[in-house]
Length: 168
Length: 354
Image (cartoon, rainbow over all chains, first blue to last red; front, side, top):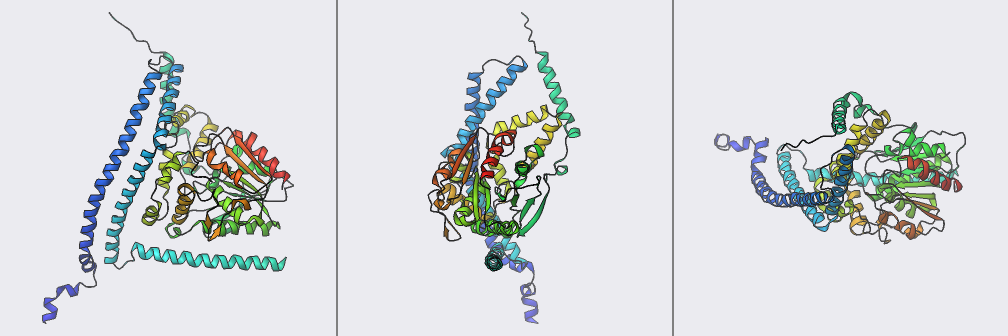
């Protein structure tokens, strides 16, 4: 009678909420870390747009210098468009080719991946609460499957080669 | 004082015409799913996992003895080599009397994230080569590798020279440190370990971003302006939509394969230094000692000429040819220049050795 009434959590031991509650601290930790990484992500994203804006400004100045007059007819518009596209493509390619852009973009993607990792970890808590395999567990199955397929494939190919030699 | 600004009536006429074309566009163009990119008739003669080996039906009575297998790139799909009859790489080769096969890498899913270079080189490509050898009763075949398919084909040819009679490298990705493209800059700064560990396969969206930074204004604005200006030109529209559909359909790249490709080619540049290993086997480019034809596009902004050319000088072949063409990465394989210049030269070279 005492056990039945004083330990209601035992009743819920097979349901999702017990497992979720046990791991809720993990979810909170992940959320805090997401917040920190989001700040880093925003920093690199701001730098990314700064680089784009600066390249745009520089290219537009070059266009203004090269084609200061307002185009008056269809031919002039066409020529202006060509100048604009060539200068913008050149300047932006120069930016995308630069070490500064590459480094910042690399860090931006890296931070985005950190956010994805936290998201995956939260999803794993939810998956475990309903007795579903986590991403890591599924990955292990994929790895095992890949290894087995590789071994079977190589054996089959060897066998085929031997058979062909035999028949030749 | 009153000043009157005059606008050239031709400008107004152009603006009105352009606006009308934009409005008419939905009535004049097909939806992407109405366009079939399967142009030249072929049969699927072999399958392994998600890969398919396609065998094109002959267009000539007599054919050269040695069949040709094309190892297409890992980015986008093989359709660009057969995008439309007048610009089809495959059809042109068939018309020149070659027996053409194509390896379709298929669409990897999450469970394929552990597929690596070894699977592609010693698994899928080797399996396709063995199938062709058996089917055609040849001990050797001709192999063509395009772009990243050229990296795979180069590794294969170095590891299995006994199976390759002639090797054709078309804009192959070989020397990552010399590559001057935006792609190589992004690849060099990528934390590829974290990327693969976190998301598995390389998602198509990431490739689309990479494409978007290549000549962004020519490709992102001018291309579409030209499209609307030519909306009445049925041939132009058809070609445009085919290429657009092809561009928008890139499969994911298996994680482990992508990781090794970025590290060994772009970051550590192992292939050209003869330091790369595939499935535990050493890739020695000097072992490529069969006739080799290297095709390079001078205006290639995806794989720069400096990235492809070193292959010609690194291989062991005595019979080797290097050709450079005044075009771009796609122009080399699917344009009127490829039909008039690139393919006839390749056909002549290959015919003499097939």
